[in-house]
Image (cartoon, rainbow, N blue to C red; front, side):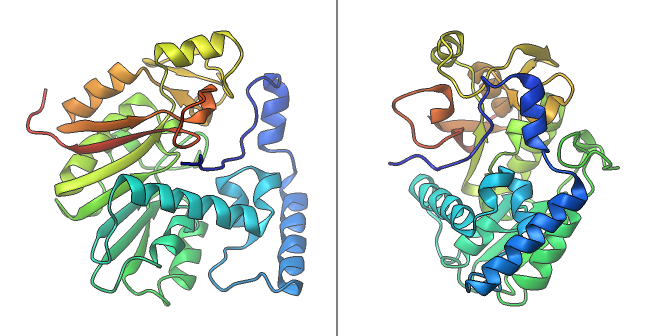
Amino acid sequence: MTAVKEVVVPARIPLKVRRLLRNPIKPLLREAICQAVDCFDAIRGLRHPLLPPCRLRVRIGCFFSFLKVGEYRTIAHQFAVLLQSLVSVKPTTRFLDIGCGCGPLAIEMAEILSSAGRYEGFDPDAEAIDWCRGHISPVYPHFQFTQADVANTLYNPGGVVDPIAFRFPYADEGFDVIVLKSVFTHMRRSAMSTYLVEIRRMLAPGGRCVASFFLLDEVTRQAMREGKSRFEFPYEFEGCLIADQMVPEYLIAYDPEDITRMVRAAGLEVEATHFGSWSGRADFLSFQDLLVLKSGDHVQ
């Protein structure tokens, strides 16, 4: 299967340059560029009612890439196809999208989930959630979106809710499929442990969770030493490795055995591991590494 296309800043560019590329444009100029892009898209007939405005699209990907409507749509569609190959999403599936942003995966799931199914999107970005509530939910009433002010130094630095103590506002065993795309790749170990416990609580019997990671097995570590990987993680931080000391949650990587222990401690099991292309592997399923999790029979 072709890898899901994601545009990222290559690791081999010097750190100062990478920081500049992550936020290259002053806010007012950034907004002006996005407004111009939206106007141009409208002239070309690309302003679909369920297409979020440029300023929201660029928050979930590379600024210069997600200016393009086609890039945004293609990446969302490719990931949805990949997801369907890993866990069967049926019209009646109860689906939780943790880190839903402005709803790229929601639009894809709208083609699958019937009114007998259910989609819940969750994100700390209040503006993105408001947009989804105002544009997606009126068309698909069984699609609901929730915002919580969970703190994150990268995505929500002013957040007031401690992720370590956070409890998702959903019932026990309420979901058949739970997805976290590019969430644990930006999450500290202590917060991840909390999220894994909550995932176990919310996952229905027989349900599955698909989560993306940066996993540092020996193959990946060797590729990093040889300069073949897209990222490098030179700094130790709270039991994991990070790419940027100034913003720890920019990129976070974990040892696969460590993740397995954390997963099992939360009452889950790793059903499948699919390594990604980011590490320079020739055999891959997506860009990031993916784990498929299921409910375990014990807690360690």
